Length: 225
Image (cartoon, rainbow, N blue to C red; front, side):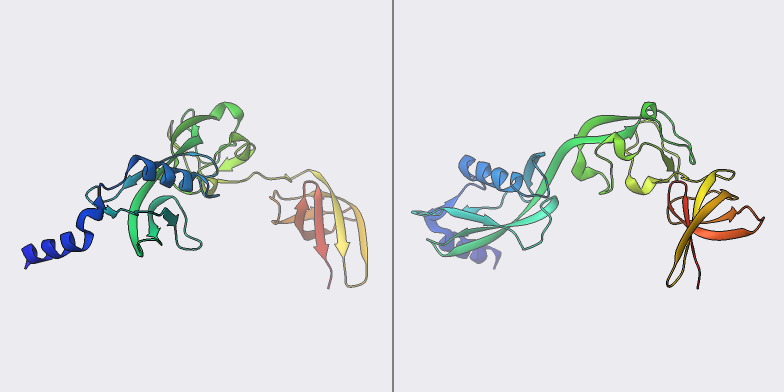
């Protein structure tokens, strides 16, 4: 039965079968991938998952390349090759390797450490082999706090970092009291540290301690029902 199946495939392809990818088709596929917003002009290297796959010839026409709407052209991806002239379409799986710059630790970094410019550096490598949240530029890491330790050379991901406190205990802050029909502001002193969105305690002039949400550096909002 296997022998008969091979004969049928050969009959269907006939003399129109060609090598897996001709040089021209290979260039067109690379150009198609590079035009995708997913890779944003990065260097790409498409590799056939099955190097023995064959693509029929498109005699008298051009092979159109497409992918499923919304598909990410990155890593394991299936491209659709279609020849309207000959009336065929094949799905060809690729491993699309993407290369570019990313951020790594330049030394061992402990959890809870605030990132300084000397703590990280930028190198080039295969982005498609790294977690999706890897940082591409060092600026995104500055003044943030590591949530876990990183060994020297380890990629730095967005999920490895958290915002540093924008208000520290003892800092003078502007306190904004907001109600249904009013808003007033005053001064106070932070009694706890917090990042943007955190709840902190603030002592006001008469000694009362109020709790509010950090709106931005040095500003805390207290909502009054």
